[in-house]
Image (cartoon, rainbow, N blue to C red; front, side):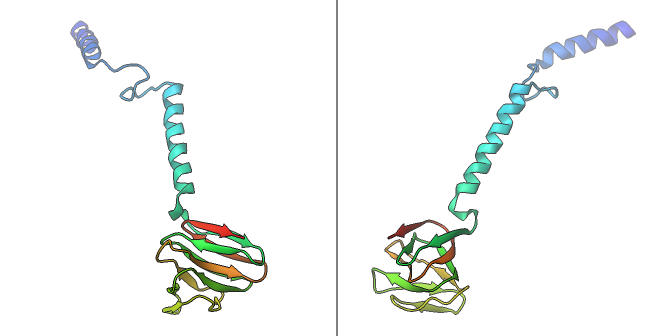
Length: 140
């Protein structure tokens, strides 16, 4: 009886055919684990660098302009700023439920949304800092 059991086990293992160190083998090799860790690290880096990752702090010097890409969100956290726009439209002030046009003062801690990538943003007259989510460019 024991001989039949051992013979069956040998036949099953040879038919199953798991490659040592492969994805089906519960005892994997170090190189397989390292490859999977590298894949995860790449995905994490992509997520950290994506525009939707969250707000990033942006320091502006007096006279600089932060121009947002389409869908960018900007909050003036310190300093003073005015709306900058190359077009007649302005930025949406989601906090106040209003629109701010070129030359209007930007209130602190209000969420501003750039609806199109057509040159809208905030210019500052003193050293200021913003937090921005989404793409943006700094103009001098």
